Length: 188
View 1 (cartoon, helix red, strand yellow):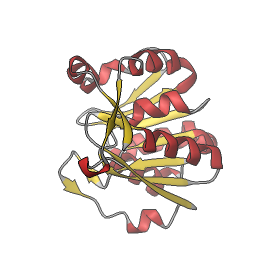
View 2: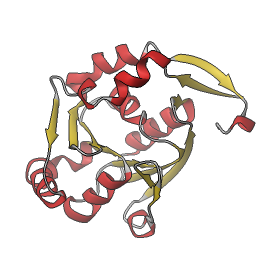
View 3: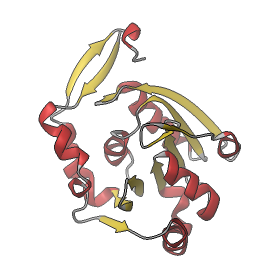
View 4: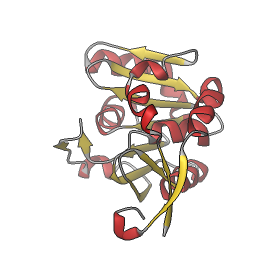
């Protein structure tokens, strides 16, 4: 048996909208991939040790154009359907961990993995079996300081300051319901 936190059905639409996080403490960058990468590099390069990146395309952009962040969380899929090959990206990280996270949930194993990887203090990569989208919310809650960077499909890249959004993210997460699921159900 494993513990997962289930997103309330009423939150599905709310959390799918990009503006839930676009309050104080979040910057949205739009434009071409190269323009976004240039802005990220010029403003956040010295903060790489304090950055968690969630999402395959954004992780690839960071590694290719900016540098290796402290932690990347990916699921090997972009826009939920295109498989991404990350063999070269995996080589850039000193530590790699895996966890399972079904869509609509935040698993305790992924929460623990985020905490462990950030605490290690080395360039880490978490490979998620399932979906990494809600791990943005988990990252905002877990890390004590720094930035969580994630892609917003068809819009751009968001950079959230964890200190500014910790209370908001914690309040949202407090509505998630902890449940136990058998590992046979696909959650570890």
